[in-house]
Image (cartoon, rainbow, N blue to C red; front, top):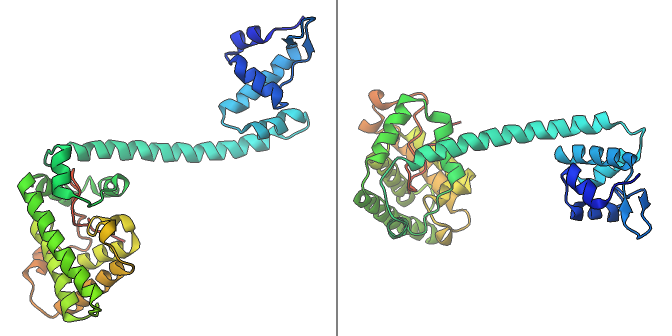
Length: 290
């Protein structure tokens, strides 16, 4: 006695179209046909289908399933072990994505509220990469210093953000002009721009001693997502991020022998807290710590 395609589809929970596909692919061909030419599946065919669906549920590609079920002597255990490793990796990745999503929701619940029109008006082209922003939250959310910086960033109003962006845009123009003019990255003009950027971070986000500023600049040169928060892609030049990094480190050397109240002992930390990333994209990169 054989089973029709409709019957198999019904009790196996697969579509008729899927069964036809398996037949054409040579993965599961019915053992018989009735006098009218319709497919009939035997008990052995159903056992094979059960194997196919088992491996399919585990995410095996059809060509690998065909290899396993075609050879009774095949070591299915090796295939299962390999798939287990892949699934374990995927589970770990999905768990991290869940954590990222949860932290992103927390980020979205803080900060100044703006309509989409207001965001574009204030932030324009400045890029905001969610995966980049949530890295700080995942790593530093339990630190009291980080929580304080979140509170400070969240207190900025729309007018504050407009001023931050205006200052950043004007600074960006002067940085590009110095770079285009061939000003040396270790020259006074470039170092002055670096110092201005450092003080901008301190004024609007978190105290930024020169060592912390150096790590921020290192991140600009290493991660395009970081530099896009400061210089939109349409305004970037090749090697501009590295140019700024060199200027920042040169400025740190220049500042080392000068009195700077922002780097006084009471504000220094061995591992300075990463500035908060508010709901809306800041023109300032949160600190990258080694």
